[in-house]
View (cartoon, rainbow, N blue to C red):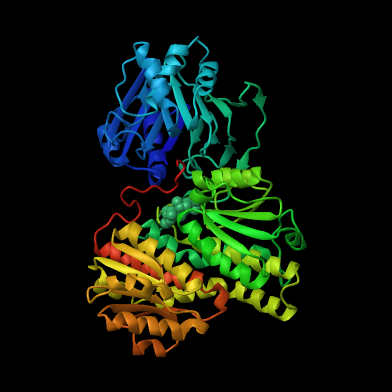
Length: 607
Ligand code: AGP
């Protein structure tokens, strides 16, 4: 959940490191710091608050001199977001500086051991133990010292290290978190995310767990845990910096909402060839017959996509589908075996609980398919097969195109598997393929239909709490609509199965309450109208999401958002667009930090 970046080359490092931090700030932004090797030793500056506050302290980097350095933007796990707790952390005598992403689970024991040996700690962090372990085990060999120290750590640790004795050289290690190397000409980099590198180089190496790298301006060498050199593939980043910029929008979130038609098209179009769905994975659709059931897992919005996907896959494939939060699945001793297909859903591909759930299920014999957006991410490399969403980099912490492209990938899988299992007729298959092909335009229609959403947000932004209710796939969409509102506007909201309201929660409904009613399932429309009348009878106001052109809704709802017509099985994706926009404009009205909401980080790489 933190961002680390390192540079070694011929240019002043601090400005380059600051630029890298700006592109990593969505990963965590409660404090930041830079350490550079200025030839005369390690110079370090840290600041609580945003990267810009750090930049002010060092005059945009001009105040620090050195052509090799490391930097960090933090999402606090141990110790408050203060200057002292910010990374990098220095060893007692300044021999090493270290930045860290992850959690060192045995840090308390290590801290006690070091304290007993006379070590004086300055911070409350787990990371500082690494700096002191490095110095106390240092034998003059920078790389081996890092290897020896890493061998003592438990948990997740992606480390970048600077050594006072070796100006121009960086050593880094990857364990349970993302770490990418950037290869330049006379300069080299490491970073938590490609977005920090793509403005400088598009030639990257994705490290695997347990790998170390030694970087100088002229060389990058990768080693395994035993210290043996390993040969790694150099990948070429296919998108450019502009894709990771705001493109004239006020916030990344709005840009990414508007990008959804293109992102959904990029996910679907390459997989529709000659009227057929081609997933280009190592299994045939008929292979799905070997699975007695399918388990979908993920966290947050990825889990919500899984819930929506469940309805579609079960409806078409007639195979039992379960959804489970990854943070629950990993601990409940699940009854999973070789007859289970686990589908892990993730935008970042680095979510700790999802990775752990994958490992748990794979250890019990399950086959694992990943639906993931980040190429080369840990989840992508752990899975047996991968369906990449092609959403492009998603910077806003609140996912939008990440979620709807996950749905697009789940729809592709459902149609592909149903046909392979012989569960749908050719005519229905062709209908669904046509609906997939039409989905990008339907996403654009969802944007065009709801230009009044900003006005509605102005009407309702002062609400103390909201309920999002729906049935079937509308309920799955309600979960995501509720989370969007919560995480960027800080207004409490709850997604509820509409049929459940009467079993207690309706006690909370009064004239102060806004109920968002998702009514896009034709077969359930009448039931939803009953629910709408029930809450209105108790004084609630209702904002409905209804199919385009359906006039019945106006009889009961106070305001209406529209979902464009089309294949109902695929409604959750276009249905979310007005809810994403509603959450965005409510948060805008409330003056919230939309792209970097408080307490959150883009990728939860720790438990
Ligand atoms: C969504 O807006 C949140 N940022 C969060 O729920 C996110 O979906 C969740 O942390 C899972 O992340 P992933 O898709 O990268 O695994």
